[in-house]
Length: 157
Length: 153
Image (cartoon, rainbow over all chains, first blue to last red; front, top):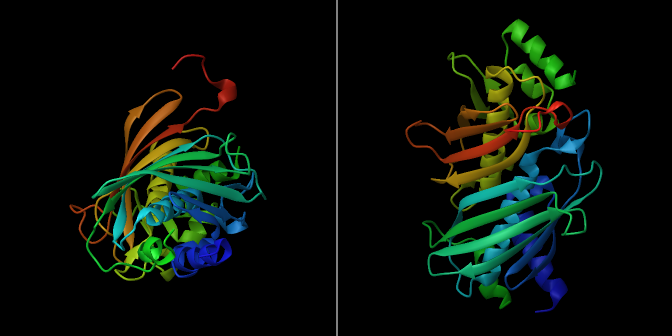
């Protein structure tokens, strides 16, 4: 599958059809095996401090969770339901008002029951992070597998 | 004094903690607000369709649970402690215990350790049954601005 086609598919199943990701307006920038990247545009509604215009922590938490989950999905050769087990976020510095935030997540290890991820949020330079995240995912959780969770098999990434 | 701290002073005078959320655009957008009708400060995230993360189950997005636990910790620090600055989050660790159904989520927070500059807060979120939390979190907040902070912890 071509890169553009693959990214369009990730956009569809990880943002357009996941109500909260869609509400945030998350845009998929990249997806390849073990790696996922998304972008969040600055919006007044997402601000935590109206005096400074700095984004609240919440939209970053949701984006990092979603991006780590997407990195997990790229590693699944067989469709499988999974869910976040825990997520740690370190807030390194405030996001600059008006600037889009980019998240980049890596799934660096996957076992039969757990996937380990880490991620950074930044304004274009990953060495100057706004936030760092570490997320663990439980694989084979109950419920029906979603299209997002089948994407690894679908794209043969 | 910041607008949020001014809002806090007004809210205290009126005894209406819910006013704190009005000053935060993200809290309004997410429909997250504190309430103290029971005598205990609780934070509620009112269910709406945009909170969904998994349409198949359906379940509320984990990121929104992290966000509301963080807001619950901030509201707790503002209302229940003698903070003179708006608490600044340093980090948060969220544990996901159960999938959250498409109904309201309620959270309570407590201070585990109050230092002069740093506070450690624990928060838990549940839906219908408080004994079955959907998520818990530990977070650190700076509660004193860097400018007037003492050099030691």
